Image (cartoon, rainbow, N blue to C red):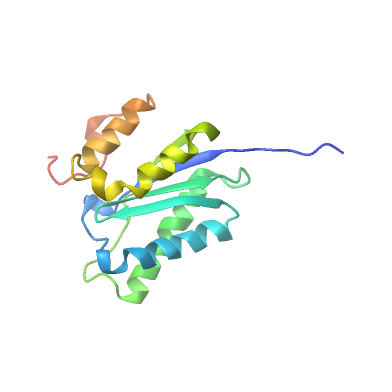
Length: 155
């Protein structure tokens, strides 16, 4: 009997609502571990995760038996409920509705992992807004600047 074999790598990027800097250094490691558990429970393989105060990058070996929107919704819903339940944020924590999902080849895995692990250094030179816009351009994803994210500086 023939089997099905797949190898898909997906890089997810999203932020708290209004791109607020709500992910605090004191608990970002706990958040990353919690999200790792969600991803593993959904039968995906976590390759890298890295959060900054105003966004998160997640790189996975993607299990094609779950739709990406369903995975992202599960991550966002469960982790925001966990943040609220744990009392980690003094402010109302919600994830932004939108997200980015980018695919990579096997040859790019190490590069993407290193990119995510070096977010702190990377963001000394580039804002999340610019980083996200550059990702969309690099992957040739058409977007409307007015609907990119609810950035505070947009009117």
